[in-house]
Length: 116
Image 1: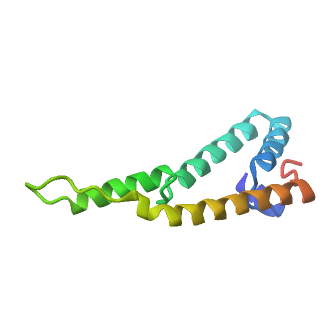
Image 2: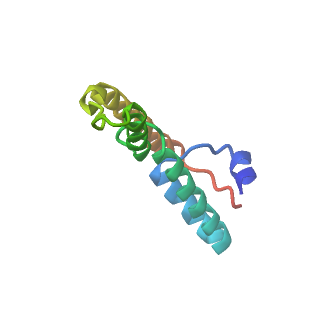
Image 3: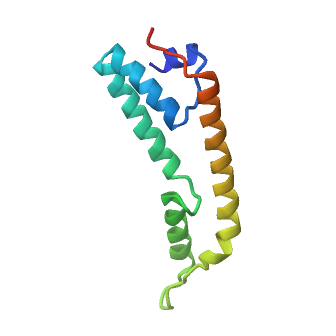
């Protein structure tokens, strides 16, 4: 499946592009649809574990940092998350621009059908 998508010139897709790809996969057969859904689930899980604060990976990174800074016998160290808000805003702006541009490209150029 990955070779088919690479051969068709596909790379990343936005949500509407992934939906169009899933419709094409469903027409090709149940196995291709399941492969697309598995790939979508794995990619969203990996994206969610990026160590940026609005994502789950960011919360894990902060928890690990607080755990490393806490000394034995002392009060638990609490990181000031508000100091990270400018980085969060920049990341969210980048994510918004990236997703909006991918949606535009998926609508303007269409999604090639790698299933034939």
